[in-house]
Length: 155
Image 1 (cartoon, rainbow, N blue to C red):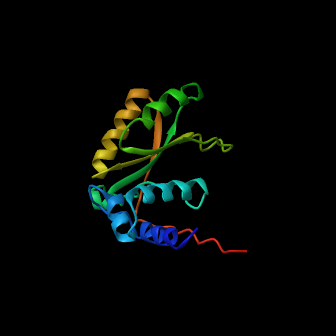
Image 2: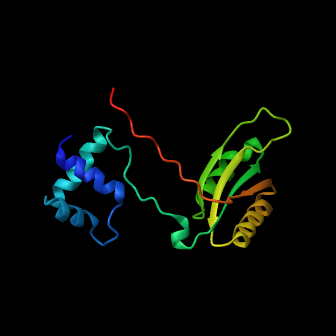
């Protein structure tokens, strides 16, 4: 990793430019060709210096202020079918199965829904529940918490 890689990573940590050509903007700032920016990013990913490259959008900034975790009680034989259907809904960002050893908590499929209002979430959840005749518990987000990972220390 050289000085240009370090500058590239430092710039990306601040955020990717919101423009029609963000890689061109980065290239101009670093005074290197855009092809080199892309090549360096690919190499940093291949070397596992970066795990992934993608957008991280703050929901409130795009009008999404209601979020809920929904625990569903799905018959085991229907988990794959219902899980696949739920995972394809654009308002659902996470959909996963969990097993439980607690007989008083038999919810086994979990989703995270995002919408502009709680009423929208409640409508969607009620529709899903009615469609598949499944029970659910819903937990709303009360505030945003951001967890920052600590930088790795060099041994």
